[in-house]
Length: 243
Image (tube, rainbow, N blue to C red; front, side, top):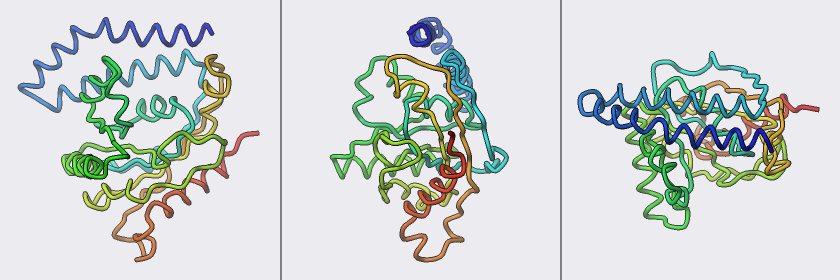
C-alpha cells in the first residue's frame, strides 16, 4: 500500500503545486500556443515518470527508433492497465492527445489537464457525438498533434490476449492521412490491477511496431484496418510474453 499512497500523494501535490505554472502557461498560450503545449506536455510527462518510478516499474522499450519524426501519428495499443497511459504518454516525442471515455470528464482537475493535452472524450453510446469526436481527432492529426487510442474499448482481462478492435476507431488515421503506429504493452496489469489496490514492482515491455502507411496497404487490409493492426500487435505480444 505504501507505493500506492506515495503515487497518489505525488499526483495530488503535482496538481496543487503546479497551479501557478498552469496560469503562466495559459498566459504564454496567448502569444505562443505551441510553447504552452510543450510546457504542459513536459510537466505531465515528468509526473507520470515519477509515478511509474514509485510503482517500481522496470520498463523495456523496443522499437522507439521506428517512430516517425516528421509527422503526427495515430498510436494504437492493447489495454490492460491504467499504467498503459502513464507509460506510453511519458515517452511521446511530440504533442499527443489520448482518446478516453466521456465519463472521465466528470473527474475534477483531471479533465482540465486532459483538455490542455488535446485528449478526446468519446461517447460510445451516441453515434453523432462519437462522429464529432473522430472529426476533432482528424483535425488534431492534421495540425501535427498525435492521437493515441486503445480500440478494445475497455481494459482486457487476460494477459497477452485482446478483445476485438472496433474498426471505426482507426478512421482518424485514414481521414487525416497519417501513419498508424502499433504498440504492444506487456505485463502492465502486474503493476496494480492484478493485486488492486496494492502496487508491486513489475517488468513491463513496450514495443512500437513498424508504422503502417495506409495508402501502401492492399484493398482488403485497408477495409479491415483494425484487424490488420491488431494482428501486428498480437505478434509483438506473443514475442514478448514473460514467464
